[in-house]
Image: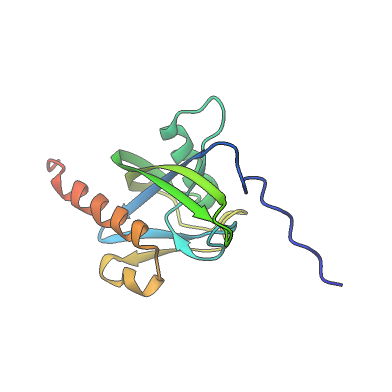
Length: 154
């Protein structure tokens, strides 16, 4: 008999969860991470996860990047705050996240998938369409690239 997949404890919430994502740049590349949990299990996205008690959203972003990828990054700024609401076939809210997205520059380390991330890869900006990213994720990456280009030269 097949083992039943454990229920996601964040399914059918009574409040939104705060998630933090980080668009990481290294030269002309951006880091993508594969999701391990529903919604969108095994799809490509940006590294990130849930904020924990007693940590700021920036601290959550840095922790999630370390846990999922092993990288050290410098957060450069806020990209946007996005509402992610997924409904089941009956129209009930199955997942509800408020996503705070930052952009960052790679500082050190080799991208290695952590325990809660089945895969990571550096992707060229022009190749992002081949990863079947959600449209909102692609928009966040493009907005991050635009904000990064607008930074004053060092």
